[in-house]
Image (cartoon, rainbow over the protein chains, first blue to last red):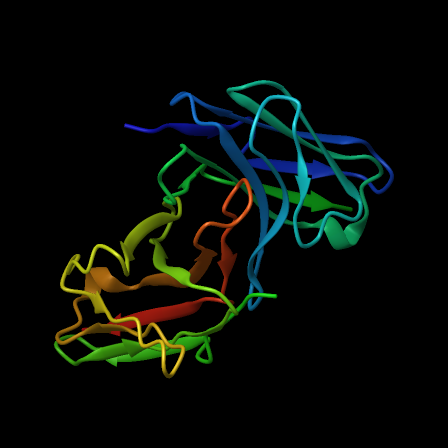
Length: 112
Length: 112
């Protein structure tokens, strides 16, 4: 059974802080993704990675960066958090040859 | 550019009534379409995909390329179907990552 875990369920940060969101998957998947989920907007892709140290911008990368030093771990970084980054953040992973993505439980980030 | 539109933000039906969630897409190539579901306090999970042509939990969805639609249907809604539903599209044979584009989501409420 695929397991995608995220480091925190809830996080409260202040404007200007640097924020790290961690995601780990245990199925040796090549592809990992970060989305934000907002009411009425659905899920929007921030960044994805198809291999270690590889990353690609998604649809809304501004204000975010990512890191993938190990295959199982994909980190999302908010260099200087702003209130408009208050959202639910979902991580997902996908193996090669299969388009199904497996999601983590989400991190609800509030930036004050 | 690919886009997915779910015109209804909320669908409220009585138990035993039919339910249909609309999904329209725009994509220049050959798409793969999915429905994902998120039950209360659970993670987002795949419900069905058009290539498998299965019925899952009584739900079916048919890809209509002429109308660029992938509507989700169930003839008799159950209370446990209450959830958030997302339609998603992936381009077949796309560059690394095969990223998903999600619609805005439809919340289904099945009343007793």
